[in-house]
Amino acid sequence: MTDRPNAQSDSNDFEFAALRGAVNYRKSLVSEFAPMLRGAVIEVGCGIGQMTAHFRSLPTIDRLLSIEPEPSYCEAHRIALPGHELIQGTIEQAPASEWNAIVSINVLEHIEDDEEELARYCKLLTNDSGFLCLFVPARPELYAPIDRDFGHFRRYTRQSLQAKLTSAGFRVRRLNYFNSAGYFAWWFNFCILKKRTFEVEKVRFYDRAIFPLIHLAETKLMRPPFGQSLIAIAQA
Image (cartoon, one colour):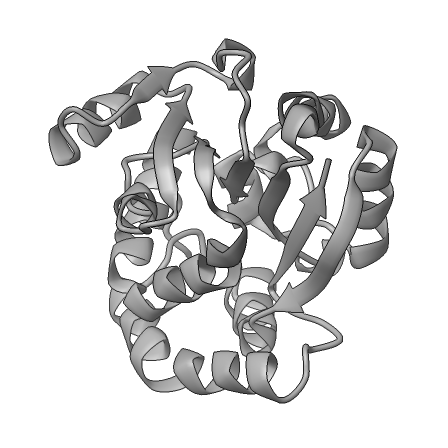
Protein backbone atom coordinates (compact mmCIF):
# COMPACT_ATOMS: atom_id res chain seq x y z
CA MET A 1 0.00 0.00 0.00
CA THR A 2 1.25 3.49 -0.83
CA ASP A 3 0.70 6.76 0.96
CA ARG A 4 -1.97 8.97 -0.50
CA PRO A 5 -2.70 12.59 0.41
CA ASN A 6 -6.30 13.21 1.45
CA ALA A 7 -6.87 16.26 -0.75
CA GLN A 8 -5.23 18.34 -3.43
CA SER A 9 -4.09 20.97 -0.91
CA ASP A 10 -2.42 18.21 1.11
CA SER A 11 -0.71 16.97 -2.04
CA ASN A 12 0.65 20.42 -2.72
CA ASP A 13 1.93 20.59 0.87
CA PHE A 14 4.02 17.50 0.06
CA GLU A 15 5.18 19.19 -3.13
CA PHE A 16 6.20 22.35 -1.26
CA ALA A 17 8.07 20.29 1.34
CA ALA A 18 10.05 18.56 -1.41
CA LEU A 19 10.75 21.81 -3.23
CA ARG A 20 12.02 23.34 0.02
CA GLY A 21 14.83 20.78 0.01
CA ALA A 22 15.54 21.16 -3.71
CA VAL A 23 17.83 24.17 -3.40
CA ASN A 24 19.91 23.52 -6.53
CA TYR A 25 16.79 22.74 -8.53
CA ARG A 26 15.21 26.11 -7.64
CA LYS A 27 18.43 27.98 -8.40
CA SER A 28 18.68 26.28 -11.79
CA LEU A 29 15.20 27.49 -12.77
CA VAL A 30 16.13 31.05 -11.84
CA SER A 31 19.30 30.81 -13.92
CA GLU A 32 17.34 29.47 -16.92
CA PHE A 33 14.90 32.41 -16.84
CA ALA A 34 16.96 35.28 -15.40
CA PRO A 35 18.09 36.78 -18.75
CA MET A 36 14.44 37.41 -19.69
CA LEU A 37 13.28 38.74 -16.31
CA ARG A 38 13.59 42.51 -16.37
CA GLY A 39 11.48 45.51 -15.51
CA ALA A 40 7.90 44.65 -14.51
CA VAL A 41 7.34 40.91 -14.02
CA ILE A 42 4.31 38.80 -13.08
CA GLU A 43 4.80 35.51 -11.25
CA VAL A 44 1.73 33.33 -11.86
CA GLY A 45 0.81 30.71 -9.27
CA CYS A 46 3.41 31.73 -6.70
CA GLY A 47 2.28 29.23 -4.05
CA ILE A 48 3.82 29.94 -0.66
CA GLY A 49 6.63 32.05 -2.12
CA GLN A 50 9.48 29.59 -2.50
CA MET A 51 10.41 30.87 -5.98
CA THR A 52 9.29 34.43 -5.24
CA ALA A 53 12.17 34.87 -2.80
CA HIS A 54 14.67 34.01 -5.56
CA PHE A 55 13.07 36.30 -8.14
CA ARG A 56 13.04 39.19 -5.67
CA SER A 57 16.82 38.98 -5.48
CA LEU A 58 17.29 39.61 -9.21
CA PRO A 59 18.54 43.19 -9.73
CA THR A 60 16.99 43.37 -13.22
CA ILE A 61 13.43 43.19 -11.83
CA ASP A 62 11.97 46.58 -10.85
CA ARG A 63 8.50 45.31 -9.95
CA LEU A 64 7.44 41.77 -9.13
CA LEU A 65 3.73 41.02 -8.85
CA SER A 66 2.88 37.56 -7.55
CA ILE A 67 -0.51 35.94 -8.14
CA GLU A 68 -1.95 32.93 -6.31
CA PRO A 69 -5.59 31.70 -6.19
CA GLU A 70 -5.38 29.54 -3.03
CA PRO A 71 -6.12 31.59 0.14
CA SER A 72 -4.04 29.42 2.49
CA TYR A 73 -1.00 29.73 0.24
CA CYS A 74 -1.46 33.50 0.08
CA GLU A 75 -1.53 33.61 3.87
CA ALA A 76 1.72 31.64 4.10
CA HIS A 77 3.23 33.80 1.35
CA ARG A 78 2.43 37.01 3.24
CA ILE A 79 3.99 35.63 6.41
CA ALA A 80 7.15 34.61 4.58
CA LEU A 81 7.43 37.78 2.49
CA PRO A 82 5.61 40.62 4.28
CA GLY A 83 4.96 43.66 2.16
CA HIS A 84 5.46 41.87 -1.14
CA GLU A 85 2.96 42.73 -3.90
CA LEU A 86 0.57 39.78 -3.97
CA ILE A 87 -2.87 39.28 -5.52
CA GLN A 88 -5.14 36.47 -4.39
CA GLY A 89 -6.72 35.44 -7.67
CA THR A 90 -5.77 34.55 -11.23
CA ILE A 91 -4.11 36.25 -14.17
CA GLU A 92 -7.44 37.92 -14.94
CA GLN A 93 -6.90 40.12 -11.86
CA ALA A 94 -3.54 41.42 -13.11
CA PRO A 95 -3.68 45.16 -13.91
CA ALA A 96 -3.35 46.07 -17.57
CA SER A 97 0.06 47.69 -17.18
CA GLU A 98 3.06 47.31 -19.46
CA TRP A 99 4.53 44.01 -18.34
CA ASN A 100 7.96 42.92 -19.53
CA ALA A 101 7.74 39.26 -18.54
CA ILE A 102 5.54 36.56 -17.03
CA VAL A 103 7.00 33.57 -15.24
CA SER A 104 4.88 30.45 -14.72
CA ILE A 105 6.39 27.43 -12.96
CA ASN A 106 4.31 24.24 -12.68
CA VAL A 107 1.04 26.12 -13.09
CA LEU A 108 -0.30 25.63 -16.63
CA GLU A 109 -0.96 21.91 -16.13
CA HIS A 110 -3.45 22.81 -13.37
CA ILE A 111 -5.60 24.87 -15.76
CA GLU A 112 -8.18 23.02 -17.81
CA ASP A 113 -8.31 25.59 -20.64
CA ASP A 114 -4.58 26.13 -20.92
CA GLU A 115 -4.82 27.70 -24.38
CA GLU A 116 -7.05 30.49 -23.07
CA GLU A 117 -4.61 31.03 -20.21
CA LEU A 118 -1.70 31.36 -22.64
CA ALA A 119 -3.69 33.84 -24.71
CA ARG A 120 -4.19 35.99 -21.59
CA TYR A 121 -0.45 35.96 -20.96
CA CYS A 122 0.22 37.02 -24.54
CA LYS A 123 -2.26 39.89 -24.33
CA LEU A 124 -0.58 41.25 -21.19
CA LEU A 125 2.86 41.07 -22.82
CA THR A 126 2.05 42.35 -26.30
CA ASN A 127 2.73 46.07 -25.72
CA ASP A 128 6.40 45.46 -24.89
CA SER A 129 6.96 42.23 -26.86
CA GLY A 130 7.54 40.70 -23.45
CA PHE A 131 8.71 37.22 -22.59
CA LEU A 132 6.87 34.26 -21.15
CA CYS A 133 9.09 31.99 -19.05
CA LEU A 134 7.19 28.73 -18.74
CA PHE A 135 7.97 25.50 -16.89
CA VAL A 136 5.61 22.51 -17.10
CA PRO A 137 5.68 18.73 -16.48
CA ALA A 138 6.60 16.72 -19.57
CA ARG A 139 5.75 13.47 -21.30
CA PRO A 140 2.21 12.05 -21.16
CA GLU A 141 3.56 8.56 -20.48
CA LEU A 142 4.73 9.83 -17.08
CA TYR A 143 1.20 10.85 -16.04
CA ALA A 144 0.72 9.01 -12.74
CA PRO A 145 -1.75 8.88 -9.83
CA ILE A 146 0.24 11.59 -8.07
CA ASP A 147 -0.41 13.89 -11.06
CA ARG A 148 -4.14 13.46 -10.47
CA ASP A 149 -3.63 14.12 -6.76
CA PHE A 150 -1.94 17.41 -7.64
CA GLY A 151 -4.80 18.38 -9.95
CA HIS A 152 -2.80 18.07 -13.16
CA PHE A 153 -4.90 17.91 -16.31
CA ARG A 154 -1.99 16.85 -18.49
CA ARG A 155 1.73 16.50 -19.12
CA TYR A 156 3.18 18.08 -22.27
CA THR A 157 5.32 17.09 -25.23
CA ARG A 158 7.50 19.58 -27.09
CA GLN A 159 5.15 19.41 -30.05
CA SER A 160 1.95 19.99 -28.06
CA LEU A 161 3.41 22.91 -26.10
CA GLN A 162 4.89 24.49 -29.23
CA ALA A 163 1.49 24.31 -30.95
CA LYS A 164 -0.36 25.86 -27.99
CA LEU A 165 2.14 28.69 -27.58
CA THR A 166 2.00 29.49 -31.29
CA SER A 167 -1.80 29.37 -31.32
CA ALA A 168 -1.86 31.83 -28.40
CA GLY A 169 0.19 34.35 -30.37
CA PHE A 170 3.71 33.66 -29.07
CA ARG A 171 6.92 33.25 -30.99
CA VAL A 172 8.80 30.39 -29.37
CA ARG A 173 12.41 31.37 -28.74
CA ARG A 174 13.48 28.24 -26.88
CA LEU A 175 11.75 25.00 -25.98
CA ASN A 176 13.63 22.11 -24.43
CA TYR A 177 13.30 19.19 -22.07
CA PHE A 178 14.74 19.50 -18.57
CA ASN A 179 16.04 17.00 -15.99
CA SER A 180 16.54 13.84 -18.01
CA ALA A 181 17.49 11.74 -14.96
CA GLY A 182 14.31 12.90 -13.26
CA TYR A 183 12.34 11.26 -16.10
CA PHE A 184 13.43 7.80 -14.93
CA ALA A 185 13.07 8.62 -11.24
CA TRP A 186 9.49 9.83 -11.79
CA TRP A 187 8.61 6.83 -13.98
CA PHE A 188 9.92 4.31 -11.44
CA ASN A 189 8.56 5.91 -8.27
CA PHE A 190 5.19 7.18 -9.45
CA CYS A 191 4.27 5.12 -12.52
CA ILE A 192 5.67 1.74 -11.46
CA LEU A 193 5.60 1.88 -7.65
CA LYS A 194 2.52 4.17 -7.68
CA LYS A 195 3.81 6.30 -4.81
CA ARG A 196 1.57 9.20 -3.85
CA THR A 197 4.03 11.37 -1.91
CA PHE A 198 7.55 12.70 -2.27
CA GLU A 199 10.23 11.35 0.05
CA VAL A 200 11.90 14.54 1.18
CA GLU A 201 15.24 12.99 2.12
CA LYS A 202 15.53 11.32 -1.29
CA VAL A 203 14.64 14.58 -3.01
CA ARG A 204 17.34 16.36 -1.00
CA PHE A 205 19.93 13.69 -1.90
CA TYR A 206 19.04 13.90 -5.61
CA ASP A 207 19.24 17.69 -5.47
CA ARG A 208 22.68 17.67 -3.84
CA ALA A 209 24.40 14.68 -5.42
CA ILE A 210 22.87 14.06 -8.86
CA PHE A 211 20.96 17.04 -10.20
CA PRO A 212 23.89 19.53 -10.36
CA LEU A 213 25.81 17.16 -12.67
CA ILE A 214 22.73 16.52 -14.82
CA HIS A 215 21.94 20.22 -15.17
CA LEU A 216 25.57 21.06 -15.98
CA ALA A 217 25.58 18.48 -18.77
CA GLU A 218 22.21 19.64 -20.11
CA THR A 219 23.22 23.31 -20.21
CA LYS A 220 26.88 23.03 -21.24
CA LEU A 221 26.94 19.94 -23.46
CA MET A 222 23.53 19.14 -24.98
CA ARG A 223 19.88 19.69 -24.20
CA PRO A 224 18.27 16.27 -23.66
CA PRO A 225 15.79 14.67 -26.10
CA PHE A 226 13.47 13.85 -23.17
CA GLY A 227 13.02 14.93 -19.57
CA GLN A 228 10.77 15.18 -16.55
CA SER A 229 9.82 18.76 -17.45
CA LEU A 230 9.79 21.28 -20.30
CA ILE A 231 11.18 24.79 -20.36
CA ALA A 232 9.74 27.30 -22.83
CA ILE A 233 10.81 30.86 -23.49
CA ALA A 234 8.37 32.60 -25.79
CA GLN A 235 7.91 36.21 -26.90
CA ALA A 236 4.66 38.04 -27.50
